[in-house]
Length: 98
Image (tube, rainbow, N blue to C red; front, side, top):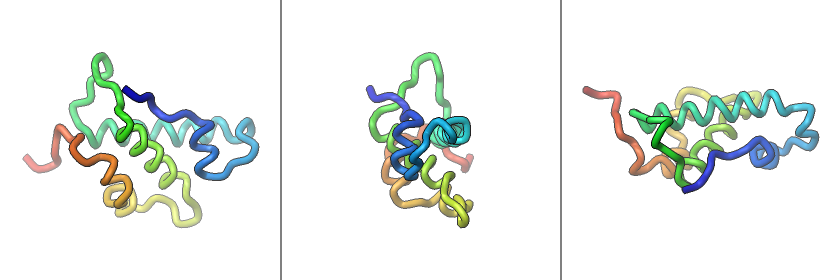
């Protein structure tokens, strides 16, 4: 199994040179992205579930989208980004339609 991405990885992706100055912000963005991935998977159980490489990359892509400015991560970007969706493929356990 893989692990969730870390702040240093996100800093490279979004081109932040002084990670120390931005660590709190990047940490928050990364935590939000990981929460989004878990929510999109559905029925995530912290006691037994672990990310695989695809979910870790999905979290990194989501963190990148959430970090973008001035356009930001719009609702369509968050839900329908092609790269994010490719990483999430085959991982969903719950769907919004009952």
